Length: 372
Ligand code: H2U
Ligand code: ZN
Image: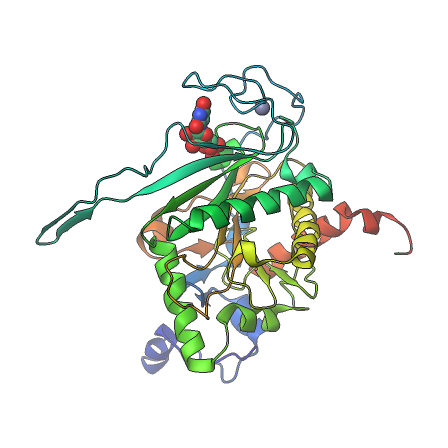
């Protein structure tokens, strides 16, 4: 990576004689100081100030999640054969189970309306929300599944995407895991929201990826993968997938998963890519659970090319993991400066990658065997 001594506010301070100007600094010199990093996927900057983790913390402590869950919970609204909050019954499903969210934020029958009054604008949004149960087992989080079981979840994500993509432009697959991330229930499940509009994150990623493709003829995230593979933030990429703490991570243990070949959407993944994704994903999730030796909360989700019939050769499928924890019982709050100015992180992406990598290696069945 190249480093430059002249950008942004550094110029101004240097011109007024307030700060030492370091000519041609190495990346390590830049990154040992409070510095800003550029998020090439969102076209945004964030502040990194690593030394702040030593500050005392007398604030909120997170309660570690319950680990001993029953395989079946009669009061769970997602377990097979149980009744849901609105009185509907779940079938006695044996693999995965999908239903329309009983409290959906989007509805397929929303009338097409809009208002425009000066700066006040609103329009209706048509869509649907699904709840997707990953397993009939109440206690079987994705991280603890066998590869075959985890593969059924990947296939479920892909199949539901394909069918919702026939009706809606944006298909958002996601999972909130753990009460720290607002999950309402420990039963392994995710959600899919699909709608007609491109939401904010999609619009930003669409613009950055399009611009990079127009300028270089290549996909931004494939170029990014080539820069990261084997580097200090790599968490064990293989020929098919980049798995990395992104250079621009805002959340302490944020990660990004990207196919290394052009793939625009989940249903486009072939059998081999799905199998290697299964392995990468399980490795990451077990590593997450190992970092603080407790089920690791996160919000994760897939970003994939919109289904609007427009040719978008620049769009690369990828997954974001946004876990909130900084320490076992202390979460990162995106408040004050983060809300009002820009995100700020306390441990560097490289330090987070180091800790995650050793947790992934320690959790890997191969690593447990001596000599391999
Ligand atoms: P979260 O755990 O990410 O909140 O997802 C669970 C969803 O399940 C939530 O959106 C829905 C909630 O609306 N739900 C039902 O559809 N039926 C129920 O009986 C309870 C919860
Ligand atoms: Zn359950």
